[in-house]
Image 1 (cartoon, rainbow, N blue to C red):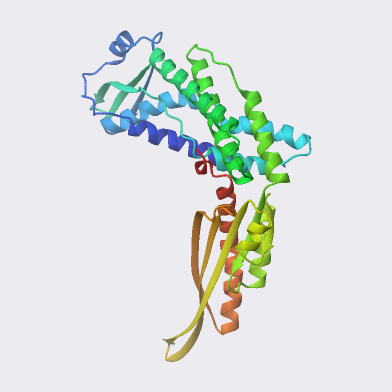
Image 2 (cartoon, helix red, strand yellow; image 1 turned 90 degrees about the vertical axis):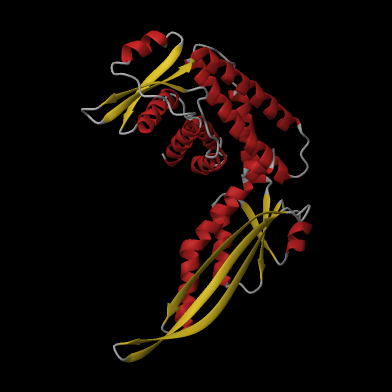
Length: 355
């Protein structure tokens, strides 16, 4: 549900950005005139209302977006494959769904060519109604071009002899994103009365390849720089493993690269301690603080290139120095370790690393 909401929000944002210049407010009773000028045989026409002309226009565009969005689900495409993969003893369905969310959530859909063709003011109700229209043939042409472009990109990417599993993962992830976008465009094209051949077999093959690569070959080397608490080390290691990624702890980046890791994740945990005092009701109280910075960077072992970084910091206090330190460890385990594992997960499957 979260991914669907994000997809609709991204779609609405794209539509609003394409709104063009404001349209004039016409006289009342525009519905018949709109139907005459923009017949359903050639146009998709929808209306929306709002307190302002812009609000009504936005609602009308969204109604056209819903015409397509309600009939397409990229999530269902991946979920169907994930269930079949689970039946074959491969990645659990929930894991592949997480992978698909990471890959697909950034794929925005837009309906190009939407125009606001009329706006009507209802002074009694203090509201406006707007009509949006999109030319079916022009939209079909744009969608056909989009499908052809995505086909060319996917075929080029899959034909490349990528060196190293890190680049192969990125190529597979980006191809899945493109193939899902292609399927969305194909289904939109079908709604307009045009046909394009599906590429379900290619999508299934790529998802199977990514599944096999991650579960059977892709290795992450985890390196702790400095003195990290042993509890933090072990739970962070377990969190990444639980995310479905093969990971092993190494003493340094050189050892990770020498062991053939596909990705090195270096973690630095820097802690400082301090005391403060506060007068409460005439009594002086001493507070012991633990301040820390947890920084993580992902490195390509083959080149030493830093692929991404994330920095988390926080502070806690306690009645004693030991209590403050224990609370720091608890806070890191509860709130920051999950963020780090999600960040590693997103870095591994980031489709933007390989165009």
